[in-house]
Amino acid sequence: MSIVIENLNYTYMAGGPYETQALREVSLTIEDGEFVGLIGHTGSGKSTLVQHLNGLLMPTSGRIMVDGLDLADKNTDRRAIRRRVGLVFQYPENQLFEETVEKDIAFGPKNLGLDDKEIDRRVRDAMRRVALDYDTLHERSVFELSGGQMRRVAIAGVLAMEPQVLVLDEPCAGLDPRGREEILSLIRNLHSECGTTIVMVSHSMDDVASLAERVIVMNKGQVFMDGVPRDVFSRGEELRAIGLDVPQAVQLAEKLRARGFAVPEGIYRVEEIKAAIEAIVGKGEKHA
Image (cartoon, rainbow, N blue to C red; front, side, top):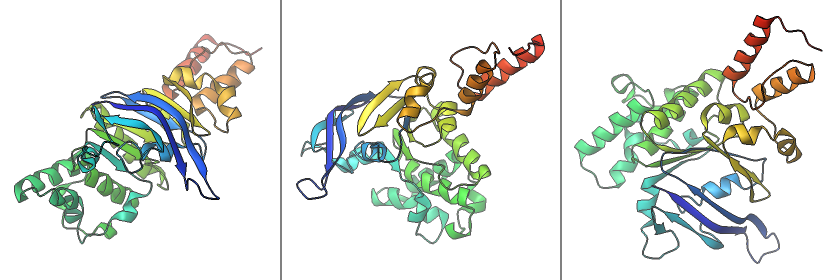
């Protein structure tokens, strides 16, 4: 299932004194099975863009096609689109409200009118996919859980709708290091093992570098860059000029080259800089 965005423009408070154009002529396609990292400084249009992917926001002009269906067409069932494209907002645990973990995850499927057997299957499957043990946790209050567990319950609630595309807006925001690693691991597994298309908004260049197969950079409401991570993160000077940085592996590679070490170009992952350092140490190379 692909998402096609054509000449998308979006203006907040159009016609008013505080009119703000958040998106300008955005055109791109997200293909089935991709893992896309969406980056940009605050106010660049990232969150506005992802809210268009399942029709929560509608374009001021331009159009969004999801699996060949135009979201602006009055005959398109937007609720059906939202089941195909699941959106997890920042701090989704703030939206948990049911008495138990099971009831919270079941809320969406129940509203679809599914029978009890199908709802139970979806709850159990969603909990398994986010590494939460059903037998141990299904009757627990969500408010007795750790921050990382609460976020996984919130994500499970979206997965229980069985979307083909999962959009995550800053999925690791506010989590401690352990919770952050848990969330990144489950996102990686959803993509690699379940084949879910992932669109992940993140301020962390390291998280994007470790997970994404494609990186889209937003700046002033427009697509500034769009390519594979190796190419995007090799343009550090341009990224810094718009208020972003590069992954730590890129920063370290730059520093080593500046001191005369022969570090290959294009490094952007931790394992790559580690291998480069090991090669330098193995050769007993001295800096200039």
